[in-house]
Image (cartoon, protein in one colour):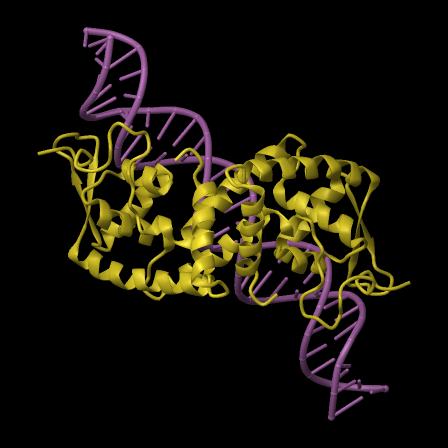
Length: 158
Length: 158
DNA sequence: TGGTTATTGTTGGGGCACCCAATGAAACGG
DNA sequence: CCGTTTCATTGGGTGCCCCAACAATAACCA
């Protein structure tokens, strides 16, 4: 009797032949592609001591100006619990300031600092490079197609 | 002085206006879309008491026949550690059998059971329905485009 | 006006996917 | 025969996601 693998797959190739139905599903492909994207971006940002969510929040703060944690969370679909930790870290590194909002004392006004802007410039470049590598197999036109398609299925209701 | 949020966003809309650079990056869109896909599929499979990875493994076992855990892991990009737990669960529910391979005593020959096939029929339908909902905003042609594009960036080197 | 409802930041707990390192048993290869 | 590789397994760890509760505060409305 053969070994269980000798009947299937090509022993000559590194990657076994896999006609899996699963691997043709959008949900599966999205998971794999997202995992690779996260890996590429996270590794790139790590050289600046930043993590993906931290970079995302810093970028959003830079664009939105003084903004509450709740709105940041809604904008980036980040859980309030996680937002607390992220802003804590960014504040500890003096990349953002957290000021009580005099008009609504429940809110914190999160604002980017000068050091935050410097850090953001570098991490933004790293993030863009990682995304270029992620989509390196696509032409510029295909890259735009992908972005357009993803935008339509990523956040239904927006 | 205004409240931190009154200067930005449209208080009339539920979703705040967000011109975030981040949200246009493939890596970010992939993360959001993958999260939504996972939520849809996981929720659907939960009605059958199955989780996503379990369904994926069961489906791969059905297609590959008697197969080792290592090859399953390579096919689906699942960590060996996680594979042990998944196969344990599937075996406990009697959806697969785990037989020592007489030809290579390191390997387990994983094979789907009759009950496994019945379960798979249902979960496959649920998974397909969830994927249809995930891509409901796309035309059939766009759905194929998306799958083609994702396939090219999901697993580089294959 | 006053009482209810909603929002904000925070803390706590938990789940799932992903990743790496190490181990003993077994197979492989020169 | 001996070093290298593979396999299943155990262990530890990270990141993103989700829900529930809470006190302080604001907004709503009858």
